[in-house]
Length: 258
Length: 246
Image: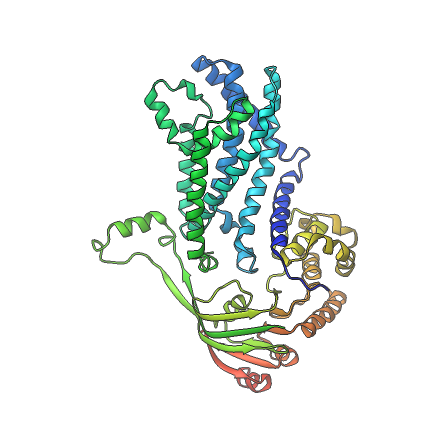
């Protein structure tokens, strides 16, 4: 028999354990498990790199690593946002029975996506190796960049999780927006392919471009631009402002929306 | 020290249909305010609990009776802290555990052993603590070598035995139950009854919803009769049961 008084630390470790369970679930009944994701990521990147490299007549040793890194991090960003929509809906059974803090469900999502990112990431060194390159010391910049991006995405996911619990069709709307953003963001193309100045300026307005720039540039051997850092920090602050407001306004209603 | 107080607490539950679940329709409605006469929101509000006033102190074993839809489950959820009151105040002191759905959080693809940790974590038991208790849980569940097989291979009885064995290792100050849990074959049932009785006795406050007169007379020292979300009667089990179960 135990007397349990769950602490904040308990809940953070609960989120981690649940995410670990989700990830372990991908391994069941399949030996290579989530590495299927890795393989399909590698195949997609290679195919797209080949097709677009030929079409645009772009240098393969620049385009292919860029596409690979782009797809890996785009997968992370779009999964965080898309699954953010169903974050609370999926945990309906738990929410309606146990008074577990809502941040647990959000952290579970972030951890799970990080684990999947870890699997997919393995493709990148392979691609770089293929072109006789390797990850430079600059890659360590990925750590602060990733922390910042996760902070930002968790705020976005929190807002979406709350609003989607109430308005279920928003999930589809968000999915469509993410689909469109995929093409508007330089993932399968390079920013240098944009013909004129106006196009480049438009690109600067795309928040996903800045997320991707922060995550991708260090791995490809360049330092992300200062503008990208500032813009992502600003977006993060604004998103958390909105998220905190919405959360405290509606947290007492959330269980009733399930 | 456990203490529960409902002060004029009401709970309204919104029931949404496809229309009111849609953001698109909401936007169209807001944009066309006054132009469309009829309200197509389809937003129904069920007044599940109305102005409840009661207090539970250490040693109170409360039985909830009432017909289906009287608000028993909603009240149990309110006590477990899942449903915050829409109006009024609810005060809950002491940690609450609920045995309403003991299978919650059980992943059929994971093994019995993994599920013990998972379910335990949801109940607030840390991994280290769980490691000390796991042998006892496995022994109690009678699952033997099945404990390392995926739960999807279990029979429904085995599934429930696993869920019961983990869910009842807690020792909460407030215990919430929906009917008595009766699990497994004759042999296991006796064991389970003993453990459940012990749990019920050791908890400071018990709240159990039931349709069984004997169960309530045996375990409770107070009964609340709910009807249409209101307290119809509140008092001694023998008295109220004889009025309710005629």
